[in-house]
Amino acid sequence: MASQPGGSPVRLAAETWESLFRAQVAVMRRLQSGPAFKALAVNEYDVLFTLSRCPSGWLRLNELNDNVLLSQSSLSRLVERLEKRGLVERMPAPQDGRGVLLKLTDAGRDLQKQIGREHVRDISALITPALTASEQRELLRLTEKLRGSVSGH
Amino acid sequence: MASQPGGSPVRLAAETWESLFRAQVAVMRRLQSGPAFKALAVNEYDVLFTLSRCPSGWLRLNELNDNVLLSQSSLSRLVERLEKRGLVERMPAPQDGRGVLLKLTDAGRDLQKQIGREHVRDISALITPALTASEQRELLRLTEKLRGSVSGH
DNA sequence: CCGATTTACATGCATTTGCATCTATCGGTG
DNA sequence: CACCGATAGATGCAAATGCATGTAAATCGG
Image (cartoon, rainbow over all chains, first blue to last red; front, side, top):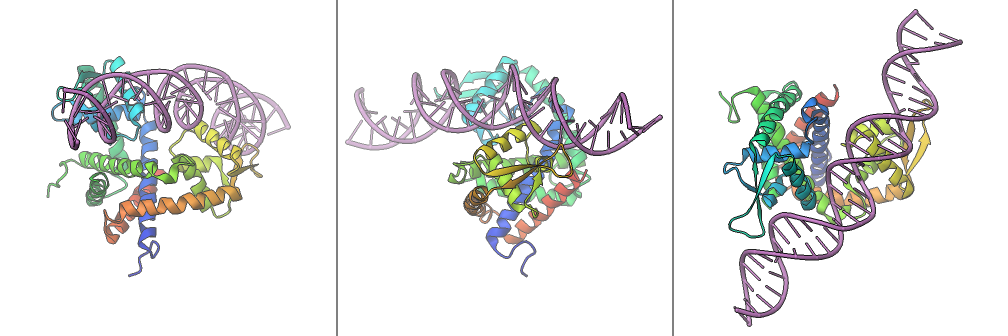
């Protein structure tokens, strides 16, 4: 069975990651050059998006930080900027005097929705011609499994 | 057969991308916090790595830029730093007076190999427990297909 | 062959990022 | 309760990044 990509498991893993990473770069490059991200950087949009998906509406800063590829201090400042622009609202965490809770303002929710609609169209325009629906489902399954394994410690 | 993730093709594409992106973030976060990237930022290593994979040894700056998620000006300065550290060498492109060719120095090649070895171990430690070999091959195939479709215009 | 447009890369400058560190709170222990 | 280490988040500061623009060389149209 000697697979195509390198005989060793280590090499296979490395090539898999390399390919995943390059695909992400290629897609992201296209997405962030689109008009959807004129108003907001990708990382900033990502924060609004994550907040919009949060059931309670409120999210802790440190939980947010798990989703985003940013240092804690950079996220702290990014949120500060979003607050200055009136897109998010801060609140001291009720149970934990150290913590900060975040929530979208109405303006933030509107902007997220607006950018989100355009963003989703851009994504679809890139992904749909590239992979069949069943390939997309498989890619979704594999990346979810990978993420679960990696971040679930 | 109304698939699991959202009925619409647009929604499936969006969820697939979201999952791919989050998986990339989760893995990258782990990788870049490891000791392998004490000496060199990930983007800097990536440039050395790409150069090390180049058959002729020499690579144009603009070709490099396709692989990396960096603006042209940032890459220009990143390369400038690498040159100052003696890791890469520049040369005016022979056929094109505007172009610049890049090559690893011996020191650059050594450093890439050293970091690369550690990096590959880290990758394997994350990927191998997460996905079976055949899942990795499938993920490799799908991401290659995606990348080909997206960057091949 | 000449002027106009495009491409490749560099650079000035403002913004963003990360590291190290600081403050404040939380949790556990004696 | 008083202490000590760990955790959440903010901040000073240097470094990295991106945007707009500059320069030079290639390419195109007539």
